[in-house]
Image: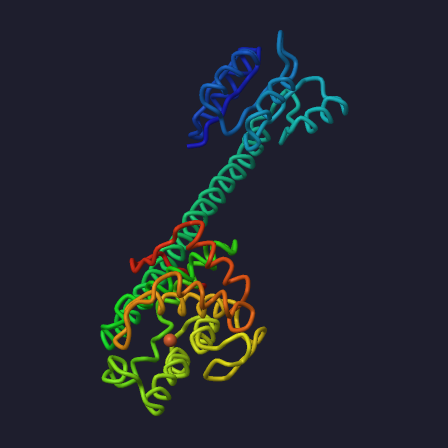
Length: 352
Ligand SMILES: [Fe+2]
């Protein structure tokens, strides 16, 4: 319902105009001066205010200026018996939507009110549509956020599943991928990479040996020394991991780091004998984490060698086989921060 306020210090005008409006079904209030109108507007704003200009204590223009401080939508119509260009200009400058000369004729008055009622109604309709659009946009945004979260969680669970599947084939190295992933993440953090990058490195670590699925389990679990063919078959796991991940929707660096996790800085690694800058930094981190974890834990063919032996290995071949910055960060972790291998499931990040 459109609410209209008529403000005039002449009782007859208030009475006449309000009767015109009530007869055609509008909801109308009257105020005998601008101060009273101000209070009424403050307690419950009106859609249309029809005000006289010259009134004691507070003028219609001052009332309009007050309304405009808080309300830009209220339609304000000015009426006066002293129509001058200056008065009209000031009224428009203060935000008036119409100007009525006294004496006010019924038809002209109602036509003016009707025009402004239409304007109020179309404003309200537009606000309603804008509100619905905002609600719909918010709903869509929330849905996108929820779906993205679900997608991230489902990708994380697939990484964890892949990690477990590899270790079912090779129970003697149970927890190896998780320990490598967690150590790689800690090295990455030590090198001041972002949490997201470090959690992504952890995710790659969790599946870096996925290619072992294609290696016969009797070779994976063989307690003695491997012959040349068996060793070649084991080495295939890096390339097989890459090939398998080609069919999975994951960022490219996942499969590349997986195929590179046995390369060495000096080109002595496998499968592609890559050197330094041809190896992804994610892979450089995994290479060190993989070597250290492997040496520190028990294998079917030998007992655990311990942290000192592992550090000796990466120190000896620092800048030859292993990236120097990664080696330094890894040594700091164990020597300064007393890092211990950890096979719990940590948070992972997969860029979408
Ligand atoms: Fe490996």
